Length: 275
Ligand SMILES: Nc1ncnc2c1ncn2[C@@H]1O[C@H](COP(=O)(O)OP(=O)(O)O)[C@@H](O)[C@H]1O
Ligand SMILES: [Mg+2]
Image 1 (spheres, rainbow, N blue to C red):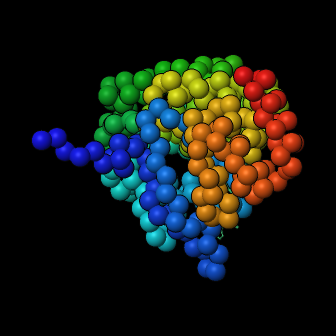
Image 2 (spheres, rainbow, N blue to C red):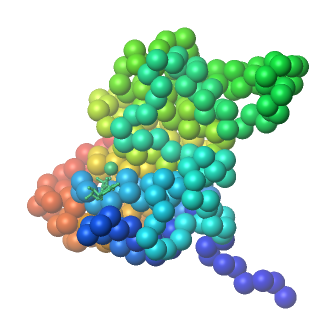
């Protein structure tokens, strides 16, 4: 007799009934969703809807007031470092690089999570340490190349153009060998060309077998990137569906897009034209 399939364990990352209360403010109310292997989910919603708060709950930065977060059917530890080790990596809406470290060093920091070295070996710089250090440097170089930043390897992070700092954050997140990558407004402040390069980069990351959740305001970007879109409004999941379902939903047009339907239509046609 085969065991029944539990849909939650089939998901790589899932939230179930997540509520987050800050004093009198309910930033998230009973939010549930599941991310499947190889899926790209888009998370959209007005400012203050609770998108970043949801990422904080998914990464152990906040402990939900109620509800659960699971990674492959097991409760995620409520500690950001352990969450990273489990396989969930993220980038931040406000870039959090080490500005006075080089691009390569920033990626090495991410790699550190996967370096298995005894403290004594590290202290003595023994052969095990040197091997592991070389492996980490090679991997960092590979990742910088992957996101198109090889030329900046030795440059201080703060000297990188803004869009490249966002890409460097993605490289650092990838250095932790994640199964899931959470991107909080990865194209904020980017021009059209950089945005398109980021869209292609996210497809490439998905093709590596990494599942992605991406927060963005740019609906054209979201609708042409994601398999599924979640719309969060005032802490509640208002609509969930394919890009086609979501952009055609009158509640989304009214509550989120906030524009008359014909304007939204025009935006959607532009998005289709750019595919
Ligand atoms: N640590 C916190 N303490 C108090 N209120 C918070 C905290 N984090 C977020 N909030 C509030 O929760 C709401 C949702 O914020 P946020 O998740 O940042 O929205 P979004 O990312 O969708 O713009 C906002 O009203 C914000 O002020
Ligand atoms: Mg936010």
